[in-house]
Length: 125
Image 1 (spheres, rainbow, N blue to C red):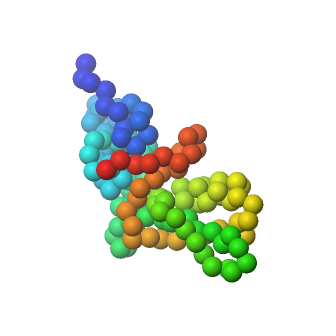
Image 2 (tube, rainbow, N blue to C red):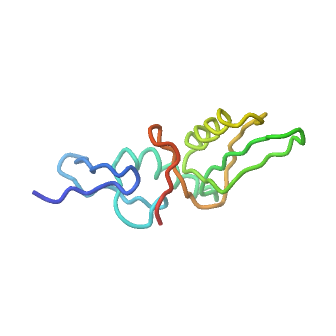
């Protein structure tokens, strides 16, 4: 029996997909090495590749946290809009001064993913 590969994104074993194939998917641009499962390919890798075609690489969460009305962000960059929205919603639930949130496309590379169970997870090189 061949060795079971582990997904470099979700860290779970890569199941057979399609039947007979256990080699997983190429995780670029989320990771430069290793293999990923079909679920992570669909939810993280493919959206990141589509962003790249448009000249963008990621989504950046931003907040307005004072009376200036100016948007502020940090260095977190996500492969999908949904991940960035989940992250900024979590942030807004913990910070008292957040007045508004948004997610904007960014030319920076993806450096984090949002896991519904673990929260913020840094992605590898």
